[in-house]
Amino acid sequence: MIKQNMHIHSNYSWDSKMDIDTIAKILVENNISYGALTDHVELDREPLPYVITKLKIRNVDIDRINQQYQGKLTLLKAVEISEPHWYPDQVEKLSQEVELDFIMGSVHSIPKDIESKYGREDATYQYYREILEMIRADQIDVVGHLDYINRYYEKDYSFFRQVTDVLDAIKEHNMIIEINTSAERRCHLNVFPSLDKICRYRFRQNEIIIGTDAHTPNELTDHLEQAEVITNELGLKPVIYQKRKRINL
Ligand SMILES: [Zn+2]
Ligand SMILES: [Zn+2]
Image 1: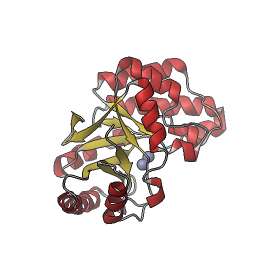
Image 2: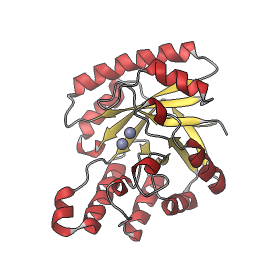
Image 3: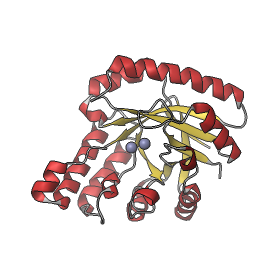
Image 4: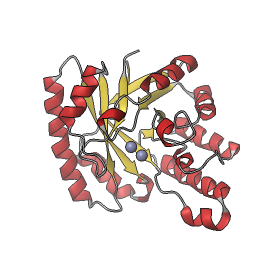
């Protein structure tokens, strides 16, 4: 299997200090042929013109690296947008102005108000409702770290039926999920989403991407072998993207 890490935050993300040269060097050292920079886009705190300018500069940097490591490494131009369905016009403009290989949409906001008032089951229900709305807004290619709410909870409070709706919607909107290995370092799961949800996803479709959600050099290879085992055992197919089109390796 060709190795990939499709979820990497460079210093173009607010919470990472990794420069692109360091990322490229470590990926090549570990025989990882495809990496994706999925830098954060947080439209609630970053003005859109700033985001666009920043990503255009980053993309020039990526072109330079791809030239330098030709034949060994391809870096993809991607973003991880938080709650993209809250900002449909801005997401549209971003996708027109900046060359992107794929857009990952992630729900990061956890409904703390609902949790404190009604409990974790209700908060989880609201979390999945947001995910469903994000998918239905139809502006993204990949659903990022499904199940992320389990980062904060000691067990999975999701409703079976609601997960069915989410998995159906992903397929219906021609999207895929990522297998995100950061769960192992963040919570009680081995990967995001949980293995039972990956099995249910596999029943519907088999294409995925694999990522570690790296923010530091040591996270660039974090539990990748584990995701590869899951991928092989379940007959999943890792893909890459080019200009918003899915490509089989
Ligand atoms: Zn995220
Ligand atoms: Zn991330």
